[in-house]
Amino acid sequence: MKTQTLIATTLAAPLMSAPLLAGGYNDVKHRYRDYAKVLDVTPIYQTVEVSTPRQECWDEEVTHTTPGRRSATPVIFGTIIGGVIGNQIGDGRGKKLATVAGSILGASIGSDNAHANAQQHSYTATAQRCRVTNDYYTEERVSGYNVKYRYHGRVYETRMDRQPGKRIPVAVAVTPIY
Image (cartoon, rainbow, N blue to C red; front, side, top):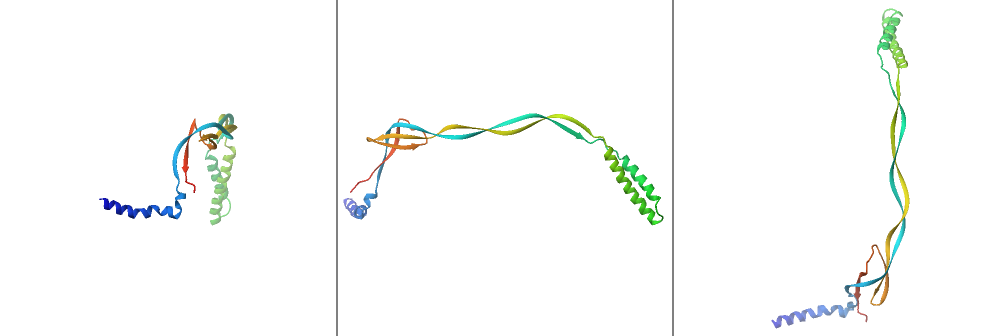
């Protein structure tokens, strides 16, 4: 058993001493966590613009127009009268074309007349209209804290995003100096 331990130590010794021989031991840092006493905390303020949406509503009078009742009678009369007039023109095949053309023209005139004479009904009602607007204002907000603290008699400063309390954790690194 002693022989095995001796062999393992003999093989491991050169490997463990290699960083010392190469000068690499200076790069190794020993770290630990400790606490420092907070001496002063000063809030850092920032001016920001804040937007608040607000709905505005008002009453507005609106006029509505509805088309009156449309009758097919003027179109029918226009077609008949146009056909009769067209039938009076020409003879033979031309008479048939004149009758069709007269009917179409009479229907168009009757339709235009019906639209021109249609009674439209209008009425006024109150409608509510709304829109969203933004109100803007500025305010001071805390964006961080300047913190003074003491560790082993020396005073340091840092900036933190929250209030630290009476003490803050610090990372301590120890490196040998040659």
